[in-house]
Amino acid sequence: MKIIKLNAIDSTNTYLKQLAKETQLPNPSVVVAKRQFAGRGQMGNGWLSKEGQSLTFSVFQAFDKLHIEMQFGVSMAVSLALLKTLQSLNVPKLSIKWPNDILSANKKIGGILIENVLTGNTVKYAIIGVGINVNETDFHELPQASSMKLETGETFQLEELQDVLLRNMLEKLKKLSTFDFSEMKFNYEENLFQKGKVSVFETSENSLFNGIIKGVSNIGELLVDTENEGLRKFQLKEVKLIY
Image (cartoon, rainbow, N blue to C red; front, side, top):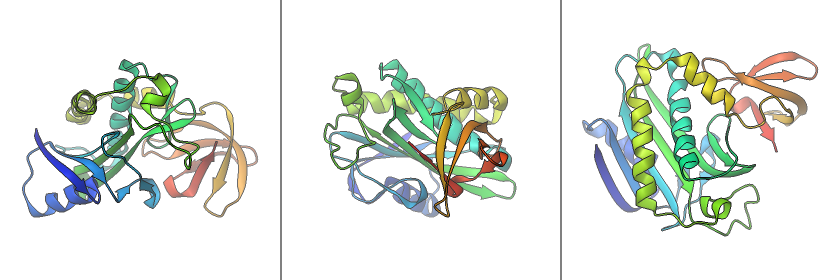
């Protein structure tokens, strides 16, 4: 594994994506930054990180014969690897908020941004960005955010956390093409935030509706049993869970 360590960068995902275009990267390769000043999250959202308190890195992972219809498996594998790591460190009440935010109780402590590069009908490689709030204690402008320290009362060593997390991630990603997809999907769905509970959702047209999360489709759509229209499938930018 090649690890590139940077003091500061706009975005580790942007840096690694450009590097993958310009050079033949070893598989896997990792870019770790002490500070990101333009970190990226899902749907164009920013990801704020604090030097010495947050863990931010991106992983280049190439695949052999991973079919395009299985690409949501990358998201599931990484989400479950984060969950496994944080569970081993006694972070309480963990869940995955679709598609791949990591919550402790109802507070976000981690996020994932995955950019798959396709060739024909297969996934050539993925750029996987991970951000975790580790030792921060001040989220006064982000009421739905928290950190590992706030949730456990403990201070964590960033490099030790990074080592364990990368080991768990790469173990799952390396075996992705041979994973039992249905078993991984079951484990992912079992850890979905608000699964089986009545929730409020907001559409891209800013209308609200009640529904119950039932799971996800094989390609990662959120399955919601809606109050008026029965079971519906939603893609990432089509719906937002209000909580």
